[in-house]
Image (cartoon, rainbow over the protein chains, first blue to last red):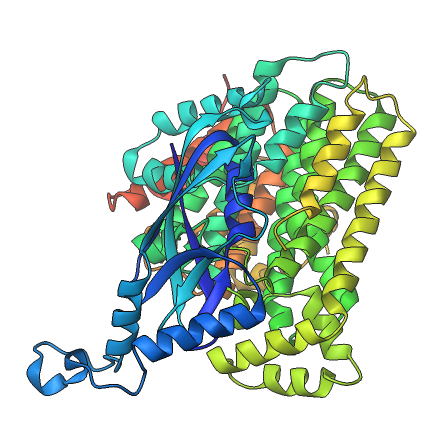
Length: 459
Length: 123
């Protein structure tokens, strides 16, 4: 059984949000091969439906709902003089509740061979009936899980993570366990494991120890980042800072920073220890630059590239280099993999920026804009001759939901998203070319696959 | 500037303000425990970093936390490049102890005492 929350923002009072690709992405991430996906609306004015995504038909559905339960009708629910304990922000939405009764709050969908079982014209919709709002769907996946995440040596990393978390004091381990168990792509540990099989000294157990430590270190940085960015959710769950306060978040982040560096040092390879330590320093320095650049938001491409190479690419690069060093690969191979990791990490961050503008990604659209996080599509849109002045003017002011929505619409109206996608793909191809010149003991296809999966995401 | 400080200068990039604001004094205090300048600086960075973050007390504002994080990361990198495995492990365990006590809201030993002991660690 695997569970998650699918989150998204709606933009109008009645809206059919196509969540098919977001569900499919969750299936891919979980590794579910054959089984079922259960969906449940967590709201009384949000329904679920399976139907055809054809714009005129969606207008018909809206018309049907309006005829059966008109927005301007009379509803006892809206007579606040007859209700007790009315919150100050209680909406007049009797029509929305009645409409939800016509739909379903639940859905169970079949999965075969890792794919949702849907007819040619079927899409899965979350139906907003009282928007715009931030919405959540509970999702559980059950059945036969058999993807590569659970094949080969990868279970060793999960076992090692569980083993390390089992011996830590509960106030520290519990928040980290929630974060680790919530998922994540595990790209960094995957890179450690792959590259640690390249040289003559291939030790899967030591590689799993290193991979787990790198993942713990990554999560430690996320815990502090979430406090700095005032993020409320990560991987569909409340952040440590939001759930347990900033003091606990700082302590948990520090603990796993220290523990991960200790575990890496105890592996006993000085080159590995230095490679990861240098990456951690680059991450911290770039995070300072990132926050500083929010004063001139959205910044420029040069600053953006400098920041993401430190914040994101450095740990990808160190993961690749440290795995190769652990296996005693040649300096030439270590160098090529270090460059490969840098390029893949940079491409990964660009793809992540694009996802911020995707309504079907499961993430809140425009979150990066709201938090003034550096974003390449936003930089390109701000430089656009037509919409750039409006984008810059909006970003210079306070950013409420309306402004964020408008900025997102403006970005989508330009060529910024395809341009960034194309750049990310070019970086992936450059990363793949780095692998051409060195002997990789048959691991090239797997590394090419990881590189492509870094940008082949739900966008 | 002394020869010792010239060696340290590249390690103080972005931390010049902190150096003048107490990091230098903390560094000189640790020189009483070790003759190795880079290890003394690592210990000082970690002590100052934990203080900046507000570990065990009220959480620092985000910008200050990030500066604290950078101090910890640089201290850790200096240890990785210059310290024995025993010393690296002792430093990490000191931070683990301080942060677990902070998470449990329990009283913790003084960071100075733990980090000074870590500098002298041998198997």
